[in-house]
Length: 238
Ligand SMILES: NC(=O)c1ccc[n+]([C@@H]2O[C@H](COP(=O)([O-])OP(=O)(O)OC[C@H]3O[C@@H](n4cnc5c(N)ncnc54)[C@H](OP(=O)(O)O)[C@@H]3O)[C@@H](O)[C@H]2O)c1
Image 1 (cartoon, rainbow, N blue to C red):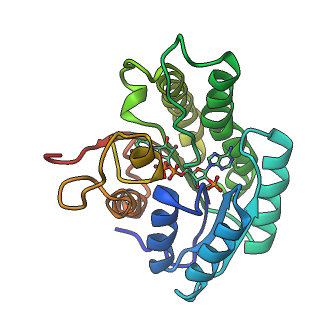
Image 2: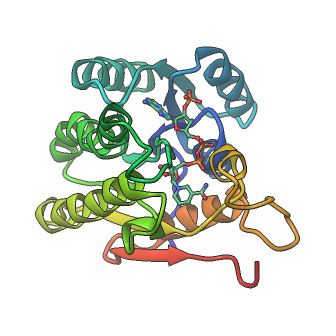
């Protein structure tokens, strides 16, 4: 396994949930961290927690659905941190509802945040990785993207699209030594899953954000010749 010490990671949606857990664990590996989200106060607090691990930490607040804001925010973070090696494309929303009850604008918002957010952020980080001739992009999809279900049409469609986008990205960018990982986690205890009524979050049985973070850390630490292109993680016996 390789060391991640001294590398720099940008994690979207790093202020809470899965993104925050990944940020904290990578910081413990000596990775400098840039986090993004919309809630600036939350980002500031997490940024201070990250600095306590002795790494550089920075944050930028922007909506991942807005291409211009993503570009400005990513450029600002790279400037503050002095570069970027790893992108964790994690920000997303879990707006659910039946086809009949969900408005077209809600449906569109899910696509804009979950799909275009991943696309805009990857495209903003790509020039830096390309110039460096090396890098990692972790795209967080969902098992919902592998198979749709009742009450989740927009979310499932957005995550199915993220899987396809990410697989195409992998095929194109591996030629530049950029590893693109397409992750499809099942339910993990977080605001999204608990408030959405998907789980009670019981830590004795249900995946926790820390489990997801360990998975991300471990695949990033594999020798650079090795790429876990696609993977799922499930609670063993929820
Ligand atoms: N938890 C699960 O069971 C599960 C399972 C499979 C996949 N996932 C995926 O994992 C990722 C993280 O989910 P989570 O469970 O940690 O969710 P969460 O607790 O609801 O956190 C979502 C994160 O995304 C950010 N975010 C949301 N909309 C944004 C926007 N428009 N612009 C910028 N940032 C935005 C939030 O930032 P602010 O707080 O600043 O708004 C927050 O940090 C999502 O892509 C989700 O679909 C989750």
